[in-house]
Length: 219
Image 1: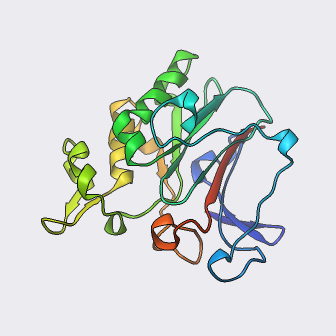
Image 2 (image 1 turned 90 degrees about the horizontal axis):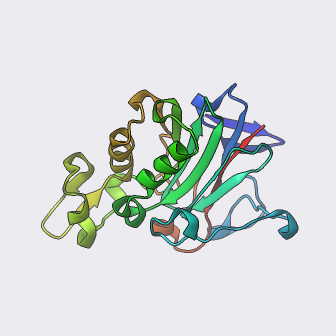
């Protein structure tokens, strides 16, 4: 759902409402920059931020993912077409977040995150998964990596011999359910970073002009 606080619109996940979990996805609305950088501007006190490194691979500690059981620590990822994925295990109150494109998905980053949650006592059937805005399949041409997802035919859309498209959301959902996540506990934002240009940046559409931030924190 889109909410507005302090005149700034942002996205929140429906299934995390009333769960004691603060969550948000930023949009590009509300800033003062112009033209291609027309955006909500975010800044931080560096002393208060521990920063991960996005490798577009699958190493959770490398870092494309983070996990905690501690309150008042906000886990954030930035993305601009890739999947921002939030996990909340409601019984043990574990939160985690990851950033993944095709490399991470093909290398097992989702499986590693679910395994990390279960290793500290989490139950896959108690995990709620929220997937933020990412590039829609009709605009995500992949060609040379198409074969990596041949085991998930519903995610593949060949338009011609040379043009092949991939649905990252279908891939993620398939991998989550294989890890015993309940299908009804998986929420998609329903927004596309590419097609919803008035709301989000897209690397494929804009190149390196901006990104969105997704965050989650236990109260």
